[in-house]
Structure formats: structure tokens, C-alpha cells
Image 1 (cartoon, rainbow, N blue to C red):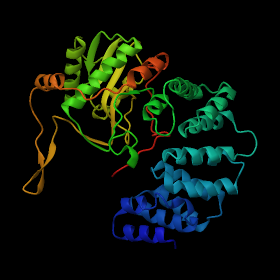
Image 2 (cartoon, rainbow, N blue to C red):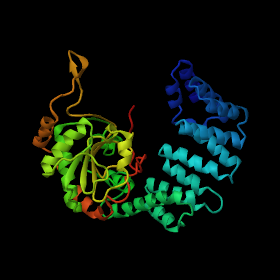
Image 3 (tube, rainbow, N blue to C red):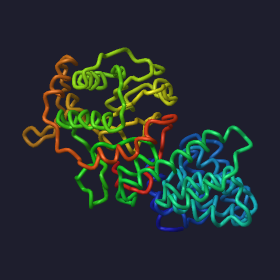
Length: 414
């Protein structure tokens, strides 16, 4: 048994199922399939996942069966363990090289881990003509996400119009991504350090603040833990105003989302932009929708914001990049993994002990006034020229969620 599996078994036997599964995240590709099947079957029994337990036992008994490998990989994807799916699906590809479903599931498993370069290599390894749908689409998407916009455009230009209209949204999505990448390249390098450029290319969002903290230590412009401030909120609203000006957008009202933090920020935005505050109506045209963190909103409300009302702009101050929201904002101030709001509960050290301080229960209008009165941080001189350069491709089409970091990777923390 490999040392990785030995350690995973020890964690499982100690009762820490989650840690046991996570311990294989970086080592699963080369695990012996029979041993992997036995381990996953034991995990599945501990979690009462009958289908996964069945496929795990089948893989343990028949590691050379293409069907057993495929079924196991499929069930691992179903339960959210793509790293455990990869070795079995790769084996299924070798055992049945003409079976396209194994390739599609393998690419899905790699995408879920943001291993886009590996996905491209698997797609390139297909013998014969790769079907346009989904093969060509997947190749274009993963090439783009691995910092190869030229290949993405080349593949996209050769794609046939899908016969099944179920692929229309995907076709529109990759087309917009490639067009945004082309626009971004006129104003930024679009290399593996260009967070603003890739954020726009992949999501359509204009990013205001690129974090300078830990930039060369793996963060590349994103925040891990963000202790937010009134100054940062004020900076975000200043950058929003600059984007609206640079793109020629003229909202006629502010619609704060219903949670407390969004209402505070919406009131501040209305003051600074001299606009009225109106109730949320996702179908209202020409309004500025304001959110502090879209993950604070109900999923149904986020889904209602995916279709874009004409002229509507969605602003999100603090966007979680490790758990992206169900709708992508048009303007984002900062990308974080964890955030503490300026008026939220805080941690402080008292007599050497860490204590949680209470949230500020001041009226929302008072908190908004503090945002308005705060001194914004230094201006990023590159934001306005970038917004001007990409204006023709900004705030167009649906606000589809995007679940990849793309070519600019950042360190993740538990």
C-alpha cells in the first residue's frame, strides 16, 4: 500500500472522514486502482453513500474493467471528489479509448480541480476528429483557462453551430470569453500575473483593487483573509464611479440587495452618486444593483440576476473567489477567501486571549455615512484605461457564474 493511502486509512480509522479524503488531493493520480476502490468503499460506507460504496467495491474487484473504472469515476464526481475520479477515468480511457463519455467525465474532473492544462492534454490525446460538442467547446474553454487565448480563438472559429440548442448557451459563453480576452489584451499583458485582465476575460467583471499583500508569495492580487475597512468600501465606490464614467454607463437609481451590509453600501453609493434608492427589482433596467458580498443573498435572488436587464449594472464589493456566487457581478472591488465586514463581529486580543468583539449595531444610515466620510485608498491608475479599452465588451450577456480561478492562481487556506 502506498504511503499516501496508509495515511488516509489512518485518518479514516480515527474517524476523520473529511481529512482522510482531502489527504489524497495532491497524490491521487498514481494510486493503485484496486486499493483506491477499497478505500473509497470504506469512506462511502462511513457516509452512507450506497452507490459510491458499490462502485468502489467493483473497482477493487475489477481494476482492469473499463466499465468499473468509469462507474467509479462518475460516482466520485457525483459526490464532489473529483481528485479521486481522475485515476479511474484515465484508466477507463486507456481501456476503452473510443469511449467518449470517459473523456468528457475526465475533463470534468480536471476542470473541477482547475487543472485546465491537463484537460487540454487529455482532449488533444483523443484519436481522430474530436467532436465539436462538447469536445471542441471543452478544448477552447480549457485552453483559454490555461492562458492560451490564441488556441481558444482558433478552436472557436472552427466550431460548427451546435445542432442541439442545449449547447447555445455554452457557445455564447465561450464566444464572449474569447472576445473579452481579445479586448483585455489591448490594455493589459494577459499573462499569468494579470488578475484584472483574466478576471474580465473569464467572468466579465471589472476588478477595482488588486491586493498588494503576498503578491509574490502566491496570492497574485487576491486576498485570503480580509479585515475590511470603511476606507476600502469608500475606495470600491470611488472605483465603481470611475468605471461607470469610463464605460459611459448612466444608472438612474440604486437597488441595494436586502442583506444589511448591502443596504449599508447601497445607501452610501446613492449618496456619492446622487441617485435615489429603490426596491430590488431584478428586471428593472438602467439601475445600479449594489451588493456587499453576493454570497449573502438568497440563491433564488442570485438566479434572477443572471439574465441581464438592459443597462443594469451589478456591483459587488467583496467577492469570494474560493466559493463564487451564483451570479457574476459587473464590477468587483476585491476578491477574498474570508472577509470581516467593517461593522461586523471582529477578533481582538485581550490579556493574551483572542476574543470575538460584537458587531456594530448602529443604524444603517449611520454606517453608510461613515463609508461616505472615509478617505479612499490610493487610486489604481490602470483601472480607468482598462475599463475604457474593454467598454464595448463589458456588461453584455447573462451574468453566468464562473467556478475557476483561471490562469492566475492564488494560494488557498482552509
